[in-house]
Image (tube, rainbow, N blue to C red; front, side):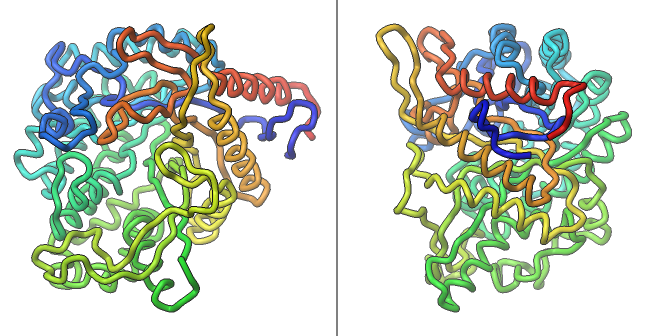
Length: 474
């Protein structure tokens, strides 16, 4: 496997697949149609000051009504797989009870249309849109939500499991637990210490319970998507290195250690101190680690940028009011490289470094899928309607080069999903950030493939031509 001089694209082995990804709340719209209940994001968006420009996902990309058009874009792109997420409030409007048939019908149609187009569906069960009814009863802070999640997983798998091969339980539980329940920057907008740590644990419990539900329904491939960060110390001082260790626990260890090493993070007491009740966590029950560590067929990795870490004092010295993200560390971005419009530094080799490190650190790690990678850029639209996004093309090319380097180093990666197919609702940033390889005019809902779409299309075609059956391997 090497860089191809003939095509200009990085090369990947036969069997490696390419896809595109989206998420329900970010694209579907139709927030109150066909029996869908409110999610925590519907509530959050309506709280003044929470989301840029007061934006909501009420309409978003109107994918609920335009899914056939969007699948046509996927078909033209030539992807092998499409990763989408299912909106829990469409299936169980209050988070429990009988399934909403109309909600299941939508995903039924979506899956059938994908299969008719020769595209493999990859369904994510939870991409942050928790039914508000469950949040009203405690949300992820309480174990009941994990139990309801497993029931929901079983309901969806019973309807779609005969056609969906690949299932992802959770997307980025770090964001759900710590951005949503500690930093307050995502729904439900809480700023808590122990509550956020309990949420992190119950998300993992929910994952483990859902794995059992999916296996019972005959699911063939089951995994979870995490967003580990490549963390770089600001200096080599002992204080900064200790800060990296605490942030490593917060961002990575709290997920990877229980899932793939059968233990809680080694440095959690150093990281959270008095925020851990009784020194461990009263929400933990004997047997939870076995449940969380249920064997998986893959783990999804979302990656965008590295983070620089330096030592810092607590922002709030009182444990009673300290949040779970206040771990005596300051997180910043590198300022010596290009940044995307999100302000994120573009440092492709850190993608290679992260993947190699994970493979070395966790020998029991299952095969990897890159379930998100992409960039928000300042696209330009020519008079003839062409959407130029050369910086996104450069980002994707350099990060796929970095991914190919990780494979050459022996990391077992089986596929790649670009983020995202469509420009969409970028959570608390509203509609000001565009990650799509297809531009969406939010007023007219017109879709326009960007230069990056055409580049990715050519990469996929070149890969397919090079790895076609019967060709001699290189």
